[in-house]
Image 1 (cartoon, each protein chain N blue to C red):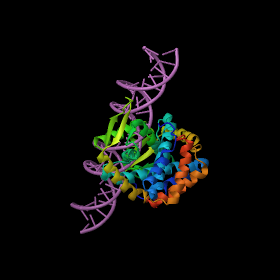
Image 2 (cartoon, helix red, strand yellow):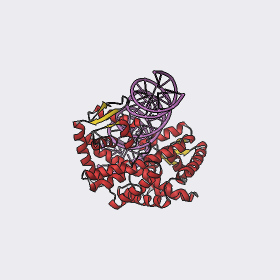
Image 3 (cartoon, protein in one colour):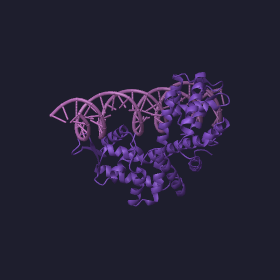
Image 4 (cartoon, chains in turn purple, green, brown, orange):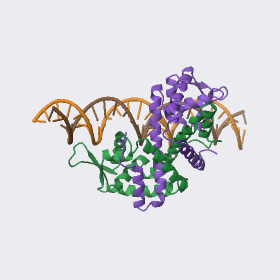
Length: 167
Length: 167
DNA sequence: TCCAAACCATAGGAAGTCCAAGTATATTGT
DNA sequence: ACAATATACTTGGACTTCCTATGGTTTGGA
């Protein structure tokens, strides 16, 4: 928890980059560093909001995904692809969600390798409340103007697409 | 390591948000999720580039900061503020940097509480090479057009300022 | 058919982040 | 001068992420 700094340290780093002759890379460096810092800020805010619900953002995302699934269940495989995290990360999250009774692992009817994830009743309740809080306290009030959010999303979509993040 | 998806899962989530009546929050949600995902992509790329140097991005940032300090040394306190990470995160990074001989902790001449960080000769060498690789393989070639990088940095600076990230 | 290759999930381990607490040192106010 | 407060750093714990390796299951080619 850094106290407010006299000047943007990323802007300072950018100046240093330029001063040392890497002007061509300075803007890219600054943008990447700023993205990482911003992600950290949002993650902390989201986790703080979700803490009273006994959730983290990673686990919230799992619940939210399951809440949208038509059939009410999703193979772990599929879920980890949609959440774009490593399979082992999802295993970790699901372990905790299952331990607190928000989610169940059930066997796949035809494929013995696959496990399906299913929300419990309690899981649905927690999801409902957590999502409401997150919408009110974070998404409705992110601190970013709508226009900026849209521009950001467009730029990042272009970038992610260029990186093979999706087809 | 997710394989390429048929469609952007964040755009899908955004659609779901709208379909469920949270259209007002959808763009913000999508932007925030995209930021987190993009940060993850960049972090993985940076860590992969730095691995041959025996570094991670977190530790590289410490070295880079020290490399810029006029006096050649910096109090941990000051460093953690500039890097905008918790003091304990810096302790963690410095432990590893010191264990591999890239950095030294030396006592502060007048304040007994403070420890100064100092690059070793090997630390300077590693920094030089790592920074060159990062500039060539990540920053020069980030996959983001210069104009996008600049726009991104501006939007994120506005946001971070609004969040009290700096004055 | 049946063996090899692909796939799903999990275990273990390394690293990063944060927070809460604890220790030591400085500073401040009475 | 001395007690209270503030600051600097570290320790321990919770959590996430990734990677590598392993055990089962399924699938596909000889």
